[in-house]
Length: 130
Image 1 (spheres, one colour):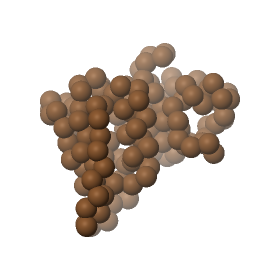
Image 2 (tube, helix red, strand yellow):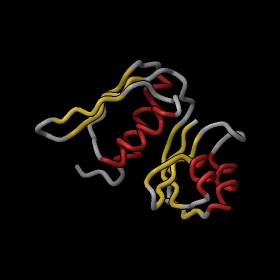
Image 3 (tube, rainbow, N blue to C red):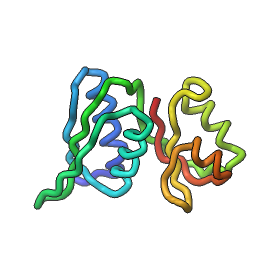
Image 4 (cartoon, rainbow, N blue to C red):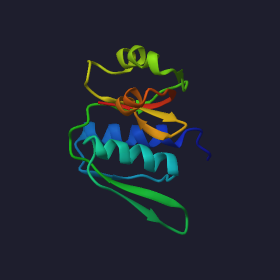
């Protein structure tokens, strides 16, 4: 079985595990994009530590959950956003001002929308979490 969007699968696994009350999950998918999104979520304090396990069948992640995540998901379609349009998408995907984070893929790498505002750059919306 092939998956179209492994990032969406991993984020929905995390979201479901948080709502059920689990303390950790093991994903079946591993990629550089997933690792970067997990590191941003870890830096912002939404998930605990994560560990990438390299297996003969492929990489996967073990993610510890700390219970501070309300919702996470991907943005489909991946909208192109200019630096002055970030406020609009922040209102659309996040519940309140300065609550949550949008993850954006820019030409300088993936970063949160707060960092993109500071640098004055745009990119493509990848995911959100709050």
